Amino acid sequence: MDSNASDTIPGPRAEDRLPPTTEAAAKIVIVGGFGVGKTTMVGSVSEIRPLTTEETMTQAGVGVDDDFGSASKTATTVAMDFGRIRITDQVVLYLFGTPGQERFWFLWNGLFEGALGAVVLVDTRRLEVSFEVMGRLEERGVPFVVGVNTFPDGPRYPLEDLRAALDLPPEIPIVECDVRRRASSRDVLMTLMRFLHSLTLTGSLT
Image (cartoon, rainbow, N blue to C red):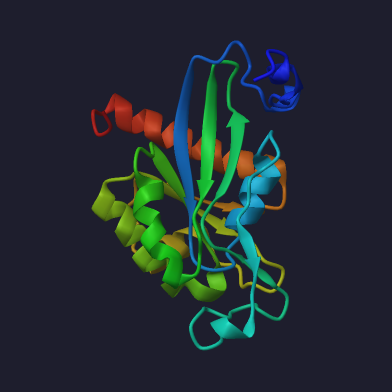
């Protein structure tokens, strides 16, 4: 092999390199049903170009996949989304968005492995989809917060009413968000990190 061959292999882009001040990293999963905004959240908040595995929705999925909102949604995640964000100069979060279609949920176990915590995105038009999502996290012992993604045609409810409807314990944070906006998505992640910190202080998270 040409000894100079390595000189022609492109390395990571400057914006993709980890900052030299990084001391710790944590894996966070973004979960929820089909079309709740997981890919959008990862894309809006990631400071690197996000990796997506979206594929075009076709007639083959009719009768198999959830088709809610399919009139405006033409692609669906089939494996995962991936992004990265710094929350301090020393700490970065690796973000993994899960596929929403139920036939791909078998991939969730692998994505949950090693996760420090999770964001459960919910759509007030389809709250029932969220119960199995939260149940799977509870089974795996992954702490989570709930982000209520606001859609233009979605009904708005007081957060405490949504807490009751989702049967959420009082200690689990629930916040409204617009995942199209970077600041809003970042606020949800910061809510999760504060929650995880509180669990650490009480000895509930080791």
